Image (tube, rainbow, N blue to C red; front, side, top):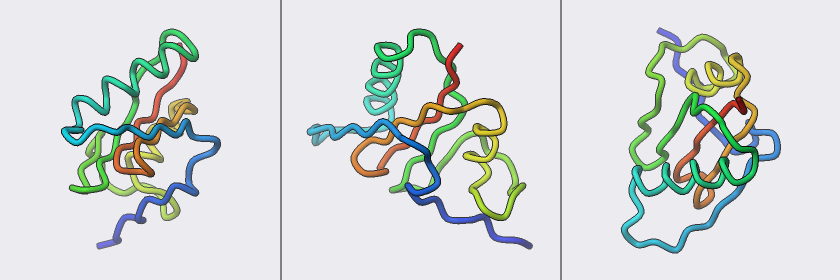
Length: 99
């Protein structure tokens, strides 16, 4: 069975980097801040994929489909995901498509 590529920030073109000073930062808070940031920058957008570095969790949960990108990132980019929000140096990554 083929292993999925490991995510690195270099896989993203011009990500929006956010540094959040929040000791209680969890997925819900990170997502809310990413949603607000994208809405303020471009208006309406659709979240296509996300990744949590600490746990390795991601969505959508699909099998590996390319050799050079993790499946969640390949999925988002192949569907027009061109807005990446990176929180705290990659602790959380959210990929959006502007509507």
